[in-house]
Image (cartoon, rainbow, N blue to C red):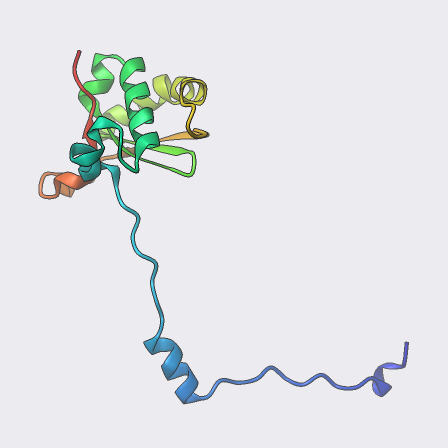
Length: 144
């Protein structure tokens, strides 16, 4: 290996000009937002033949497992990349529901759902503006 002084110098990183930076700023694209299951489940996917069949399968499996207090306080929001998101109406119920149902649902959904892999169940408090925007309120579980 040649001594440090004899090695050729590397060129410095190229600097972008003002016109190039302007072009980058004008052509910046943002990814489209993910579609929530709420409005879709109420419309075309309710029969299980739509594009969100796995979400419908998870929704049905949760509906078969849970009890009446869970149904009153929770709603199904979405399933994405193995993570099931469930909305809780009242913040004071979040800890009680999570402590009872999180491990049980994770275990049972991994066993019951054959189309995909459920790795995690996440509980979140329902947003305050759900009354104004019903699509953010999730899909309620049917009462038995």
